[in-house]
Image 1 (cartoon, rainbow, N blue to C red):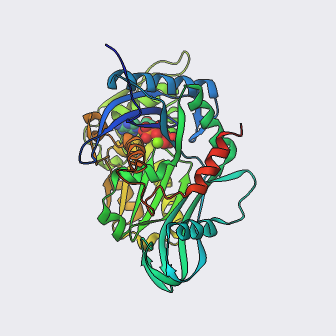
Image 2 (tube, rainbow, N blue to C red):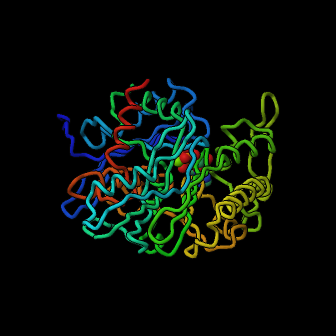
Length: 411
Ligand SMILES: Nc1ncnc2c1ncn2[C@@H]1O[C@H](COP(=O)(O)OP(=O)(O)OP(=O)(O)O)[C@@H](O)[C@H]1O
Ligand SMILES: [Mg+2]
């Protein structure tokens, strides 16, 4: 069977701490995204969301992309790639430009966003996103698209995301060694949010918490715009290592036990049947209970949600999230985790499954694919026919493209 070699596909690469997920999508006649290829490969080359071993990461990306290409029967050349890690910083900023009683043009909007981004950032960081939150024309707030309006003074409020140059360069390097071009680096939190949130939730105020293997990524929305993003370095891998230490068992068994019998709330454990726990080295297999396992897991999840709450208070956004919290990422599948999150965060918590896409059912059934789906949605937005609207969550002007071009050329 001959392979199609087509540039019309949307391609996403979620290079996570636990797995690389490569997705290939097609855009239907009504603009809907149809996932036609999925490839997943476990990763060993990342720690807390950041590449620490190029060879291992390249191998995982290659395997995931090949599997996705085989399923979709095509070859892909470029991808939207997710980025996260504790090196990510975010801040809100304001820019102003004079208009002098004429109609606001796209150039004015680019200029005001550039003005808002003119912040002193540390030499080792570079801008990843500048997402417009709202525009203000002569004091009139809450404007989403000011083009064509008249006024004297145009103001833009933006959310800026930066990351270290080296983390981005290593990711570029891994992807390009697999023969792919990075079309755009996208903050994983923004991608996951696109995949799991409804427009109503963004409007009312909501917090997306994506808990993966290495990091917990937070994004807060209100009034339809992003207000805050943060990364907490506590996630599924730490729970696995807690189990390994508490039960004195190798990490791979601890992970299997967690996936099979794990629960975040000891009081929800219904059948307290014994679990076989292989020992380390010469130690014999022991029998421990599910109740004990849940008692080992709960404190770490509790600590994580306390950090999330503290971060929301620190950034002064806790009171914005009337729509509650949407939990996604692989860890969101842990039984009892939604209840525990509600208990600690004291807001309504729901599970965030990726929606807005059709096709492979496995993708829409698992919160672990939220980032990959969100990256496909980002890719669709960049297609002239389906988006690339100013004020969209992509939100980059031409000058940001130049920065990313420069970044690509500098390693
Ligand atoms: N069914 C499940 N129940 C409980 N936990 C699960 C389940 N499936 C996966 N996990 C856990 O989810 C984590 C992986 O989640 P995910 O695939 O979202 O991570 P990732 O995107 O690779 O990592 P990160 O985003 O942190 O870089 C692992 O810790 C894994 O143990
Ligand atoms: Mg992830």
